[in-house]
Length: 173
Image (cartoon, rainbow, N blue to C red):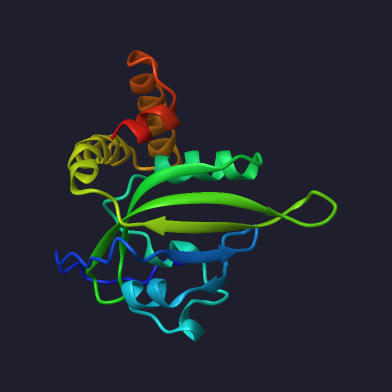
């Protein structure tokens, strides 16, 4: 459940030498958050643990990117993605996320681990127009699942038209 917060339009930043770290269970509930995460998100540890990672989802973030993320990591692969998150007070912050599955001794996925770094301003400037386009497609549909699928299909088509995989696209920014 995402907390209803009024957006401030204020961007929070963090240092190039800082890394945001979190771990979730297989349902996306947070089981660990480092201090950098807590500072940027504006929550105390007790407010985060056991809560869905979507607590910090910014409404300007296209759902189709999260569909791609979940499809990728649940299949056992890693993914890199640019993400804008929402702080508890309505501020926002951009990250370049690397999300990987966590396995138990039997080779089963038991959760996910994410490290986030400070993205370049150039990459944000390039990804924002795409995210606005994808979000506009999503909002054309009354049903959020239909909108997510339509924007996902749009993303796949754009990648195909440019002859690149998602990973190639992300690393080209």
